[in-house]
Length: 173
Image (cartoon, rainbow, N blue to C red; front, side, top):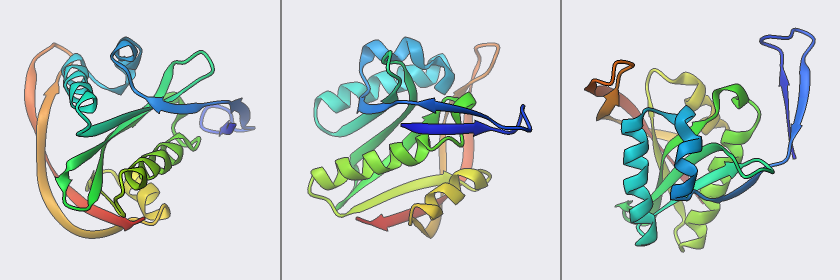
């Protein structure tokens, strides 16, 4: 059971308790995940689910009691020797800062251990200090920087290349 207190819109802080569970993300979940990104992004996630069926990745969903995903993220076992690479983490914006990201990362770490690996890696955009602070709180340590890029869909449906610089982080499990 997670409890979220929203003080942004309500200074008195409205508390909401939410029961959630972590399971594999399924293709049937994608229509309920539009909050996580554009149609281009969801097509990419759909391709990753095909890789999950082949055992190359795991893609997780944190779901409500009515089985709606409110946080999603993947683990790629093909990127680094001896480590799982956590990527594409997203939390429903209205439920950010409620512990769902922490729950998702910990579930990903358990999946990595279940694969017999003892390290987790991830990359976080340099201009995302909130996410970096979460990863540092969870024990991740920066060890380098690397450029990254992906296709991003604009509100008008046009696709452009998003280029960024990421901080590379790792943690022993």
